[in-house]
Amino acid sequence: MILVLMALSTAVVIPAQNSAKLNEELPAGAMQQKATTACLECHEARIILQQRLSKAVWTKEVDKMVKWGAVVDANDRDELIDYLSGNFGQERPEYNAPRTAHEKTKVGSTQQRSK
Ligand code: HEC
Image 1 (cartoon, rainbow, N blue to C red):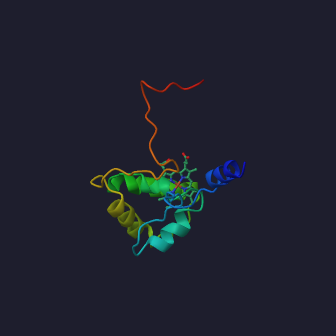
Image 2: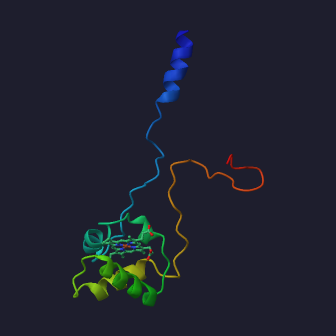
Image 3: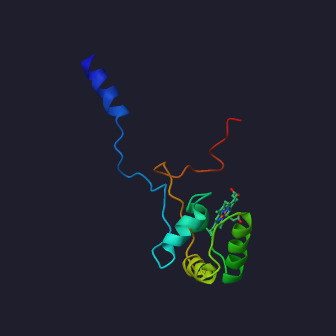
C-alpha cells in the first residue's frame, strides 16, 4: 500500500523542467521596449514572432494595428517597422512554436479524432 501511494505521489509531482517558454518576449533591440508596450497590449508576442513578412507587409501590419488602437508614436513608426521586418523578415527560418507537450503528436493516418 505504501508503495502504491509513493508511486502515485511521484506521478503527480511533475517538475517544471523542460517547460516550453510560452510567454515569449520580443527580441532585443532598440525598439524592444516600445514594441513590447505598444504591441503586447492586446496579444502575445507569439503572434508577432511567428510572422515572416516583407517590409511592405510589416508596414501595412503596423498601420493596421495602429488603426485598431496600438499606440505608436509617429516618430517611432519607421524604426518599429525596421525592427519588425529585420527580425521577422521572409529570409528568417520558420518559427517553431514552443509547446507544452514534449513531443509532437503525429497527425495523420494512425490517429483519429474521437469526434
Ligand atoms: C488594440 C489591440 C492591439 C494592439 C495594441 C496591437 N494589436 Fe496586433 N492584433 C490585434 C488583433 C485583435 C489581432 C487579430 C488577432 C487574432 O486574429 O487572433 C491582431 C493580430 C496581429 C497580427 C497577426 C496578423 C493579423 O493581422 O491578424 C500581427 C502580426 C500583429 N497583430 C502585430 C501587432 C504589432 C506589431 C503591434 C504593435 C505595433 C500590434 N499588433 C498591436 C490587436 C492589437
